[in-house]
Image (cartoon, rainbow, N blue to C red; front, side, top):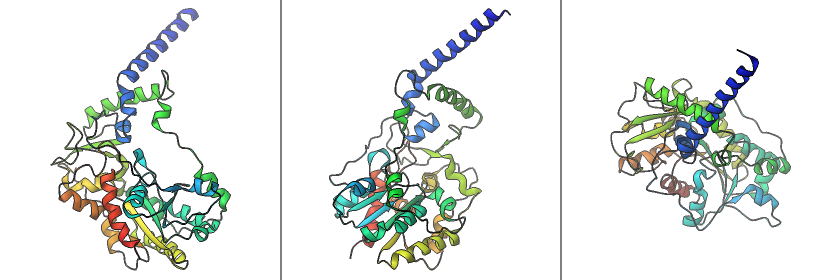
Length: 352
């Protein structure tokens, strides 16, 4: 083959791949990217949810806005956590607390390492300046062991400038990287879509490397034609190889609680139950997997100096009543129906 023919062959192949990627992206894959995180990660096009994100008439304050303001307001709580705390898909549990119970929240999304973020607020002096009634420390269940259960966590030296820089960072979302005719994610996403569909032929439980699916024994979602289907994140199964060390988790939380207690501030620890763990009793084929022991272990650990919010028990009770859509069908996160139930429990510890 001459050099000219070889170059022409390469150009033709690249053209075909590009044209195929464009057709696949705009005809199919882009729709999944515009939906929720498990739809995107699992390359699964769901239907519209019957319920939609809920808006509230009162709002939390973000740490960036607080630091930029000239007047120093008072707040009932400071909230620190991951995406469950930071308004995934537009609904914020802090706004429900404000509207329903008139509880003012100051939200801080820093390093996304819950206890380290709290310690930065303490060492910077902001905790003393704001002096809330309580700090709500949230972490999704699957992330607690890695952040709180491996080693002792110590105070981190910081100042207000460090807090401001972290609070001001911008996060890129799926919509931003999927816009346009030739979005940068197009070719990779189209290839992943094809490999994921091949993966399902081998193992029907796996939608992709990152998203799994299971059948439920009853309808617990209102997503049309998917009412009895569960989509969940692969890392929800990490407990099988990396069980929680409740003693170490408790030790780290107690240390933080004691520091806050000396300042007259309560520590509220709110681990958000994994989607797979929440719906576990209703999964038809559990593949021989035992139930996650994180919440039972945390319930039974002695000498808690903090308030433990058992989101699993609260939401399991609601499922038993037949409540639907406590988590979004196509997402790893709770819906407003789920967090409102949890907030109704939290508020008991915020009242005088």
